[in-house]
Image 1: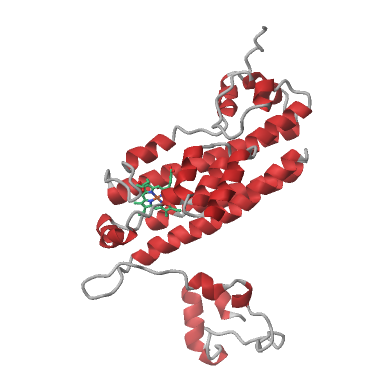
Image 2: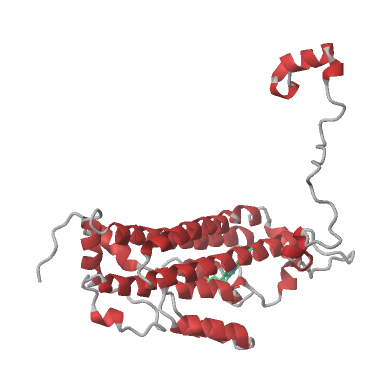
Length: 314
Ligand code: HEM
């Protein structure tokens, strides 16, 4: 009989009566013979993942009177680093989705965008960890951040650009780094996921306005009322437009998840620094609150108001 499967007082009584039937230790597991232990000439887990570099990249800068770094600075650093890693994967997936949509293989992009949504969930659920940082704990190491701020996250800006929230003014922050500046500039000049989807819909015969197709993609997206009837056609007959309909909903997922990240960031900021200005020089929480009004795919919200209504005749 395996005692570990006998719950509660029954198991305790059995143990007292039959101590010899218990294994000597229940906290270790024997290595199986097939398990590899000699890594003298084999690639290790740590090498594959470049762990010495990854795990050696946390450098708290604060120094208290006793010369030691603040205990909580490690959380702050790791929370940012893990966010940047998830953002790296999100960029990888969004770029793949764009390639699929450009090739009119929407179904392939769904797999990718389903993953993107879950990555975004990791990103916004992480806020719970940083929210364990109290205002005084943060204050103990905040001076060591100097003017650095998440506002200078190139990857965050890349995600915004990939989703169509273009803002050439943001490039100024990266003038000091030619490689990063070049990557963001290329994304600024490339069609966003939304641009590519609208081009795809036009190729399928839907009446996407010509000025939308020929728009200057370096400019931020501007709400276009003539797209609403295009989306209404799709939403009014999902069975006929199934993959386009699915794509619309995937875009809504991505946008909602992005907004949830913004909102949770704002709430974390409010509870940690209140209305203090940011280290990056902004007014802080009120500046972040304004970002909640930045939308990626406004017509996908607008169409919801006309679903079920008759199509207006010109
Ligand atoms: C103690 C925790 C945090 C505080 C108090 C905080 C505060 C702020 C503030 C005040 C800003 C506005 C820009 C400025 O003036 O600095 C900002 C922007 C930003 N932060 Fe944080 N932040 C925190 C954690 C994080 C984390 C963990 C990330 C993850 C990468 C992050 C990413 C960003 C990004 C991407 C922006 C730009 C947002 C935008 O453009 O709207 N922040 N942060």
